Image (cartoon, rainbow, N blue to C red; front, side):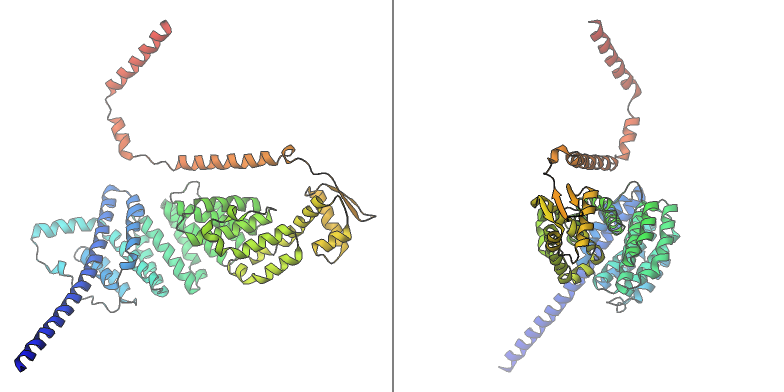
Length: 507
């Protein structure tokens, strides 16, 4: 009986040990899988360096890395660095390990002295020489990729000081090597560095560095770096409400063509914000409309912010847009304050407008629109005057003052006079009797309004066509194939065509 219990205990202990070993193996395989995926991504870097094609980095490498964001671990990143850089890039390995040791969230707990199993396996001299030669092609590129992956992992854990530290080291390495292959990874490091500084409240401290990096990107013809840094500088200026400086930078530094549609979309949004604050509402509307159309569906927060600015700008232009025109169905539930604002402006009641502005003041403040919304009071009054002119053929200034919620009749007289002078309404004002006599409503098709609407649509279509034409990319190998075409065959074809034409005209 005692023997049976002992055997059962041994079996239970063995099962427990097997379960622990199985769990450890699963954890090891998980780390190994992440390491293998990162190493597979480095193969794309080697291919990009060999083919001299930066688009492999921007279009494939960074997107594949973004998919791995949820699987990243500190141990897996360190193993990846040791496996690839060990033996071929000792300087890069030491530099990368030193900065990772200072970071938290698992990096400080990893054993940096132990080598990965792949490095401990014995290989013949030919295999080692082949691997070393292949890895030396992309040592710096792999090091920068390690900084990007580490920054991505730290951003997930909101370790902003560590993100800033890693990005600054990566940017320092980037400045020492002038190659276009690493430009997309450098742009990603710039974005993470600015994000970390914004979260820490130190955006003003990196403005000088961003300007230096932008100058270096221009001198190096780093297109993606210029686009990214320009947007980061505009965001930096707008954060501190330096609109004049932001507009001066945008006017002088905006490139004619864009390689990244995402960066172009961001610039249009910042341009719209700047022009809205500087009272250029038509330009602001055009930029914001383009930004809303170019924005990807996945960028829900960005589309929401663009829609908020766009509805306020359209209200400032005297338009009262419908809900379907401003925001798609997935954003309407989050734009209730702005719909209430549009309803108050369309009604032309100053008291209702002030109530809405006071009720949702915190929402407008958080969106950076409180000072812009305050300008809508004049639009509310103009909208009310137009509604009164449409409804009444003859009305006194005192009644207009009561309907608009004004405290003084002289204010109503001034507002009506200005509306008549600006062409907002067609009416006559008798200052002696204080009576406004409205004219009959004219046919809209007898005015220039349809012409202006068609002109705006045609201009937009032409802009879309020009941008699509500029974005066309041709296969560089196709030119070689065309040049390799036999000249005698081409001449024979031309001669045959000419003979056909001669026969046609002879007939």
